[in-house]
Image (cartoon, rainbow, N blue to C red; front, side, top):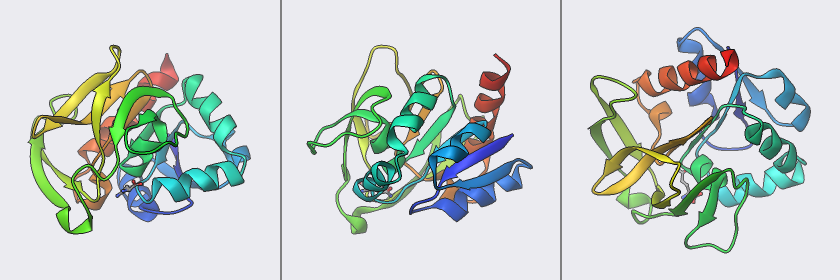
Length: 193
Ligand code: GLN
């Protein structure tokens, strides 16, 4: 498996380390030509407004959107989730618009309200895994075909639709590899089908 990590900003190195720890290769993606040569892509956390602007400036927005709509497995963590969402509740912007969810940016407050917690996500692991939230969004509306994978305090913080996976939290900032393992297994299944 060769996984691309969108590498404009944010938690790039951490995702690369987790993918490599699972014996798959990870490549930094900075331009649209590189999109043809990967089995899946991760959109890391960071600042969605900045990453969104860079997606436009590098002419990546349209080809990346097309690849995802044609089945390229994608996982957006935190800002990555905001970039994939159809609607952003507290912003007039939207970016890739490939998953029918509405997200609320900075839904838990500012940097000092960042927190972590352990939760059981049965599709991902039989054990509780640590979830780290940093100026995180959560999902306020799920389209009817979108599956909620995990709720924290009643709000959906992980969801899946076809080849698209979104999480409010950052598994790459913990030692736990289960979420990356899960994404790789989704990529393998989708590449085969
Ligand atoms: N608050 C950021 C945003 O709205 C996301 C934070 C993160 O990715 N850790 O883009």
